[in-house]
Image (tube, rainbow over all chains, first blue to last red; front, side):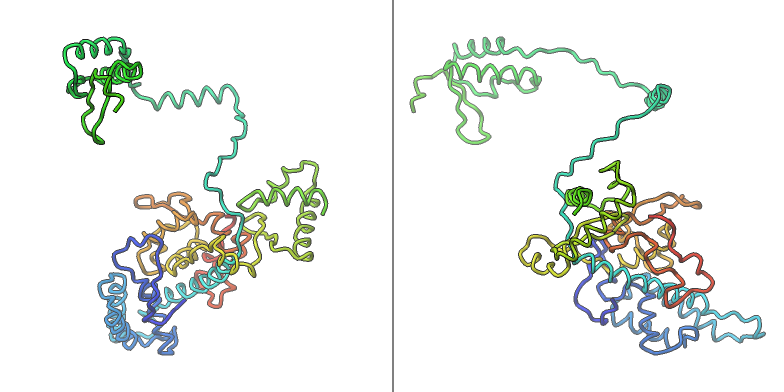
Length: 250
Length: 186
């Protein structure tokens, strides 16, 4: 997994939503970089020469242009603090606490996790090389098991549901039947006066849906009966309605 | 093959996901658990010895018929099926931590990995490899994550216990060993 530092192949993160992907530089984090340094320098993980490693770390994050990554900067700061602590006089040797202890613990923990990653990677690759029957695009939900509940359980459930409902939102629906015959009569009377009329003239601005619908249905009904002609010169253009049925031959 | 083995074969063929043994048992109420396992064994041997292009594998807490690895290249070249994308290093690291420490919150994962894992968690969740298993104590009751059955399938694991135990790993963490063993169940 630890590819050379300059690996070009980008490892995608699934969503790619991160503006800055440390992943691209082949290190999956500051601990990964630190472990690589320790391995490269061939030093004992339990006795890290912190000054040297810190220096290397800073150098690498500069050359990798990772310095905007906060995670790396945090680790750099941590290393420098440990370096400073190491310089302090130790006093009583028995009471001295190694300032590197926490870092070593994290590194070991991280390394252990990386071993698991290796296992997962190997197993995942094995499975990747075998195909299963593919998923159907439309997966029908398997039928639910028959409901098994007692009457009291059912009533309790109803009660629970009803209690969550606060004020039932009631709307009064006023029945407005579509008046096709009325619309047809209207169109007829208009066409009696004018040879041609536009759709926008028939349906006035602010007309209610039922009025629009009535006019449309009436119009279609009359066109079917041959009483009038409906023409739309261009897509989305105004519809012209005329009583000139003789021109139909055109 | 016996009729029970044939019945199981038909059921496994019809399913896109591994079928747990208990579910296979519902196919034939008469069959004893021992007979069921014998039939599965028979099917596996049948595939192996007669030489089939598929094999029977125990995976993700169940049984599944999979194509043999040697035919993968040819199938993919003919564009009949495509191998899924490999997971990124970040995704694998995050999964490894979740598998061993579940249920675990985002902050603890970030402590171990040393980086922000928000977007990785999101994409793993979208891929169905992890799920929210609960909420932790403490500030903001953080979401806790665990692996899913699909995780086992993805890594050809029968169950979580198949992952190496903490003390089997080359570096055993003396003081935190007990925390790193796989948790029970999926």
